Image (cartoon, rainbow over all chains, first blue to last red; front, top):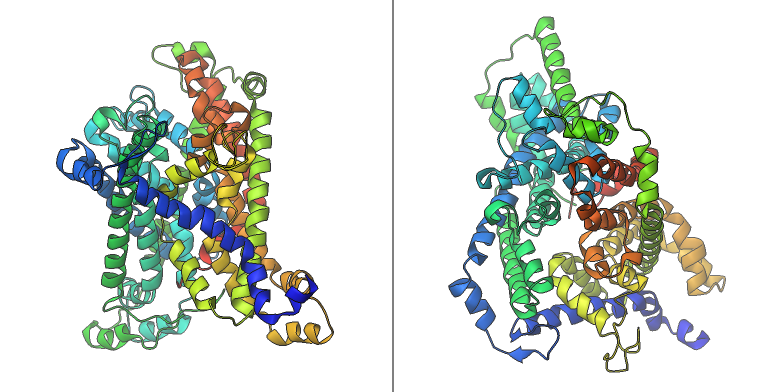
Length: 297
Length: 318
């Protein structure tokens, strides 16, 4: 041991050792294993049988709902961004610089520490058609209460609303941190030039906040594309909501693997979804970086 | 991690000077109106955040008769505070809490140790393969969790010599029925390595070299000199990891479906939902869910400052 430690080249690898072992067993091996399984038919009980690209071919050519789940997943991911990002940005801008933000922040970040099962159940009760909180409130204004979780055309929208509610605090914190890092002198200079509130936001805040916006959109898209725990709780006893209207690709994969025991096909789904997320992420990084303020760091 | 993002130039300003109308004097009345609007918005938002929780509390307090009445009663007339005690008698809540706490603490401790060690090596040593390891840690964060779901399950199932398996991994159930299945796959966090590396970069090399000159061993230097200097980073990472894994559901559910003794708080509550199918029993279900979130909310309120840093550090720039 003494000799090993005194040999200078070995020292960093002693510190990296546990991570290297972990990476081999729980990262490299799984990635290779999943790729192999996706090229086989495997029920997990009998040995896998090599089928080449048949699983991928099946997904795109034969599977009746795979493409639909992809579309629904994209709808969910983009829907949560389209609603959630402007809302969080707007709220963070309105009171990001105010002195009382601490007290408010606690309320907005409560969902961040509440487990997703609890959040799912809480909204299962809020969304109940006859006596849920939401329809009671709508009733106060004389509005009809729809079946938020039972109407196929509303099911995914309801999931999006819950997700936006859940992520609002986290996104606001990120935007608030980005706002705090903008130097006050930019605002002063713009005010001297006579800029109004909207112009300050449009020409100072927004360009300087671009790195944060980029981060929120990219991470939000990745997590949205692989999300389904919430749907398991919101739509119990269904195969992904009424008429599968809230079935995302992640949940479809999970059902294939652990309920139908089709490991090969499920692994193929996970790789298609991964490829899609990866390409979309790279494209977003490209598009959003282009023409923006180049932030260092 | 408080670096500011000063841009090289502020291109908006020049363009603005040309396109903007001359400044208007703003009246005090307008400012007051703006402030009022601002607080109205904030209050509305805060209500939207809090009302679902209050709705849940009211639900937990209703009697079965109030639930079954038509129309159902909203404000409980005879609040059933006893429901919060009864759930402890009817559900293994203590067991779930103990599991949650043990598993989460084990994961947190492991991730702190592995992140600090790896982050230290990447920040404070120059060696062949360093850049490669760093790129690997950054790139690995791009791999979404669902890729690992199936492989992890079978790697643990066929772990050689574990849980009745022979050396080829056959014969038993491997690590599936054990706490190791809940902890081991999360022993390393790529994000944690990245974060700790950032913190170690700020530790001066001279300090470590001075200790080496005095003949201190490398592990002594790491644990006694370098580690205490990144206490803030460790605290931030600890709270971040703890909250994330306290609330983890998907993986734990997958490996404990047939092992109720290992289930954690959220997983137990999810898998036992069938016990509350009857409308009359739903108050108890709501009470159990509230009990499951209360401890962590209290902890969060106490540690809010650190958690906020954990969320925002390492994010603004990547």
